[in-house]
Length: 558
Image 1 (cartoon, rainbow, N blue to C red):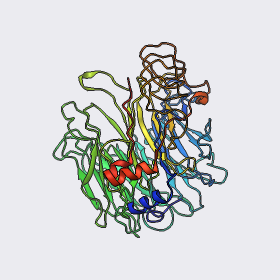
Image 2 (tube, one colour):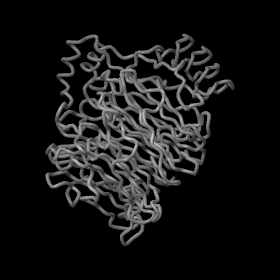
Image 3 (cartoon, one colour):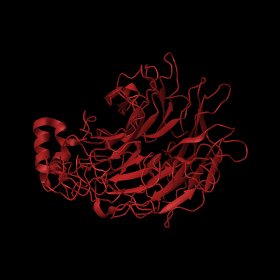
Image 4 (spheres, rainbow, N blue to C red):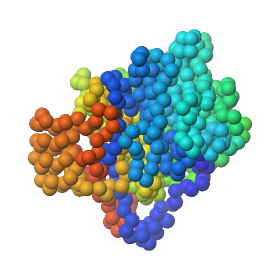
């Protein structure tokens, strides 16, 4: 259901401090690096976790739900693709999908993109949108987009609305997003990208907006924007920005990562403002990277109001594609204001890796301080020197009440190779405990099946067994990162024989963590960690400023 960005906005920092004084038992908790829940693909090459999204409340039970795509799933013939949805509850996510849909054509890549559409028909239930960028309806692989309505019984089995690309190889549906309510009519709208769309030049790209209404989205788009030159790939990434200028209308971000002027493939991102008449014909704001091969805008996200000033903020990622052009950060924060987006106020991830794929998402409020945070994933394709490094990474950056902190409060790099951990990320409060939880995709995970893929959940409660910071040998139930040899159930010690850790350096007997049905065996995977006390946090705030909000995790031993 669409929510006005101004309603329920996060409190200002002084009120957060007052809350800490009045409720000393409150703790700021962080996720652990032990998955509390996971689900893996059930066949070779499925690539589950290529896309992951928080999709709102699809069944109206008061809990947020999530979706994940496996675009290479084979259903008799190759690459039909499928999407799983898991409904949230007080107990978190279920062991098996609550709903699954499979693509209708071979090689369609159904699920290469998924997103919450908001409530497009005004029935009080959020809806789901799925992209299949190679869907072929008989006129070539133009692509397709499929919308499923939510209801009290959950998602319908068949799409209520379908839109198809115009010509062969458009890649319509390569990116999809719920745009929010851009014209203020009370119905949420849908944004679709087709990065290979061609008018007069190859791969100009196009992004299209379909307005919602009582009968669902309109049959043809009310608004389009087209790349102005060949190879711009406009629409390869797009996102809802929230209301960045506080005018009461939602805005959208659209990227052209192949934009070149004058630097080759430097990339450009445009913000289009909403109004009573819909999206504007020209961008209200645009930025290009001035960094050759940066592919600025390959990932985009509206992340909420980081500083509680009444204006929503956005995060933009790049994906450098050339070993000679790797200097500089990969992710930037742009804050909203009455005049629109500002210059970048924060940046991160300067480690030079070739062919990064960056995924960015608003995380919600992970530590309970009243400010939204940001989750970033990076599936590293190749390190400098040509050495394969497909583990991947994920980082959580907290708001300090003004911008994002310089250092991550939570980070994880799995030891298991070929995971592509961080291929997609999302954050939301799935169990209504007041703390957002983190969902991370690993599209290359090898469990019972080769490259089956995986999605993993990291809870924001930080209150289960395991202290996560011991020096050595305390025999916690799970996840303490001891130096070696304590036989914990689920850590990554250097020399023990854990039953389900990922890749110890010296043992050979770890067993796969997933059952034959693709579900996670949680018999030994309780989340672990602890939250900082409110008094300690308050003291840190008073003495050290906003940096005291985060308890830093010790580096993970490898």
